[in-house]
Amino acid sequence: MGNFVDTNELYFLQFQPIYMQRIWGGKLLQKTLQRNIPEADSTADPIGESWEITDRDDAQSVVTTGALSGKTLRELIEYYGQNLLGGLWQGGRFPLLVKFIDAGQRLSLQVHPDENYCRSVNDGSEPKTEMWYIADCEAHGEILAGLTPRATRDQLVESLSTTRAADLLQRFPSHVGDSYFIQAGTVHAIGAGNLIFEIQQNSDTTFRISDWGRLDKNGQPRQLHLEQGLRAIGFANRISPRIPAVIGETAFNRKFPLVDRYCFKVDCLRVVEKHPDNTGKLSGSFHLLSVMKGKIRLTSGSGQTLTLQFGDSALVPAIMGNYTIEPLDGAATVLKSYLA
Image 1 (tube, rainbow, N blue to C red):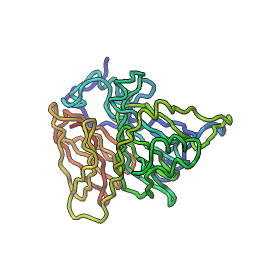
Image 2: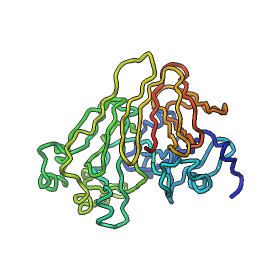
Image 3: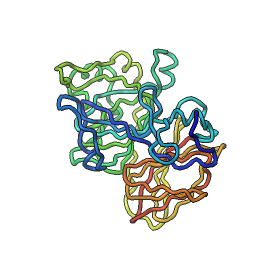
Image 4: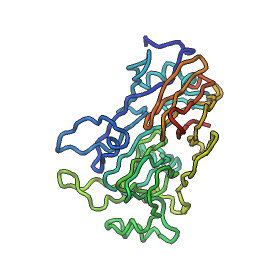
């Protein structure tokens, strides 16, 4: 494997987005982020997802900046290992999958399995806990996540073939800056008119339990996974998944922890002046930085820099250690995802 830089020369890494067609895709990737979305055939489904960083067999992120341009994330992991991802990484694939979800229509009603389900059923499913951050939304946008306190299993089963299933879920009007922690086993659906930034375990297992009667372009319903989905639902969990946005300006840098779980951590950084940070090198973790508001400049201890704007993400190699985040043109909001 040639054309790799020395470990001490690793730098802030950006990757080419991978666009995915979805029956429910929308237009907010173009409208909000000014993304140059590939032209699709008029008979094809619209773009509904932009995978910002992924290490899947069928979807590999490719570096777009610097001497490592053209390398896949998998190649980087195989070559650099813990120097890239840190000592808290347990080996294998990149532990996260990060994407934008552009919902022009309501997504299906679905659930993801947890570790217990995957161990007991052993059907190739992968556990998937995720977090959403509302990057933009239209006035009618809403989130459906978690069963209401009074909803029963029988009521859910009876309603799945109708639109009444939505009434058994906790429903929230969408607000930019709100976050949602969607623990595996939580029944959920993203409503139309949302641009969601999603941070999740590296899994592509989804059990669709209702598609609201929707038909595809061939007039056929999409496949449902009722048996698996009902088994995966955590019926005892009725906690509200919403994490309200922090409102108001701040005169100094602030860190708001959003998710602190065994599988990943996410902090929301409000940056109004230079913010020093440190990956912890081989005893710590990579940092994945994603800009949700404003524009920032990253600077490493050796003086390497990278400028990011709203919608951009960058991977900070664990070996980098000290670096700074500096807001440009006013305050910035940055999501920092990492292992702990």
